[in-house]
Image (cartoon, rainbow, N blue to C red; front, side):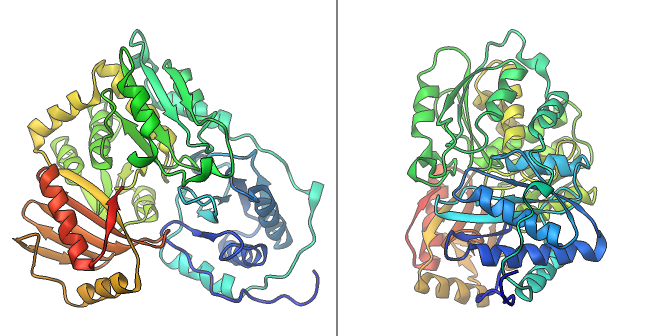
Length: 477
């Protein structure tokens, strides 16, 4: 080590999904060393000599940061196992779920803008850490040294291939028979992320004809955030909408743990609509039995669909780590959230955009019709609603307004009486016909507005009511 170790000048704090921030500001090599020393100390408390998988996505300095993390873990007496990278995060979490490692670190900032970097920590259960373990790692990291270490170089095991076993497992759990004779065409937008070469390979292996957009893996992601929201998928929507024959559009984010789906007419499905379809597809085929875990910002249609299949539903705070816990505790075998996160316990206990894409393609191939045909069937049976989210600028004024609303929640909103208030994770107002939720993002400098209403026009009015409560401006995402 070069000189005495010193702690990070600012406290390391976890957001909704691990630790992340702007590279060179929040995320630096000294701060990474402190974080990983905290992780190592936490692992040594219960798993001395733990085998820790380490991978990274396509972002700047991913390889160097992953190598640094491996050196820190080895210095602490643990067994780091570098994974052949860039690699999708779900491939790593699946490996932990299958016992290939006792834990994992993935250097990624997921869907954030190219200037961001970060680390996701995967516990031995196969999901992200939450609650007391997260606080413990923060405490240990902020008391750890951040000084340099001796690189171990060739002393570490190199380039473990996790993609091949992941694809083999996926084929075991997704029905290739649905694709036979369907001649389904999939247009897949990788957004220059790690899903490229993995998600498209999985879909081809199942029997789909696949066209790839933005398949080159690049650290800049084409100059914009690799987030599969409708505004980033204009070309995908155009290609699918103009296609002849059965076609579906699919997309994954920078580390392929989030997904998006474009129906045959070129229109995107909302996250709640996609979740309802996924839950129904798995339940119809007997592949879900214990229940479904949903975030509190997910719409009500998936819950009504699950109930119709006799499946219990539990609601959890925003952040997939809470849903991962429900899976690991056996309370559910399917988990989903409002921002493109989906997991199914046989494959893994954290978000898996590749799995979601494969199951949606299976559904499209099986029904040989637009997904909206099946969605319309579900809405006829269980009722119709519209759900979405919006990002508003997190100004000093809007943050103060949110704090005020948390202290004194309104009794009415959007011209209707508030039936219930939940302040455990921001402010959630329940109405007879939906909800309105306001909270600060745990991964970006924005405020989120989530809402559900009976139809699209009512949803826009509810978004407007949310902006008025914050005195903020924003755009739907």
